[in-house]
Image (cartoon, rainbow over all chains, first blue to last red):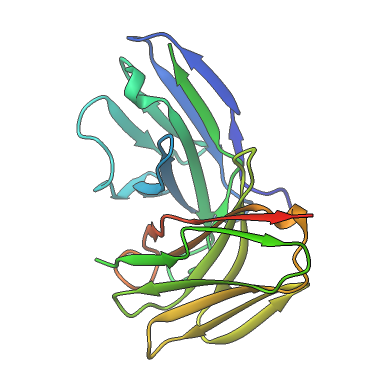
Length: 114
Length: 111
């Protein structure tokens, strides 16, 4: 059973471009969480999704950021018109069901904005 | 919302020493996570525990639900244990919450 997969592992974008980060949860997991780790800072929650639904997006910036988890395919975190302050490591985690507390982390995507 | 405090923030020890990292949280929880982040940046889940004690190799995690406190111990520490150790709890206490993280403990084990 493959673990949580994220791609790309490293992404370089110029200011103003769009960044798309993908997360494939573990097989059988229908809950996905996105976290961000800014340089020299701790991990912070961004958004929690189930298939086709956003459950909690309280940690996500109101502008330029969006997330989805379609019925088929990976979860996508999209950042439009990236700025240098978006440079960070973005981690996703998945869990199997609502009552489960265990979250399994992916390897992360390191976004660098030039 | 839960708040998480970890101590110490930085810890340097000699190979072979017994290591203890502490974590306190403010809201009752269903489970607590200990995570390890290596210099390369990847995150590994070490433990998820809701009561008592768990052991995996040289790592031991304990939790006291009443006192809202958990400890991570490393026995016979080794330089490869050098990493950031992070405590995390559900933001609102339980269920399928997003997690709130401690700031991490930077551990360096010198040969």
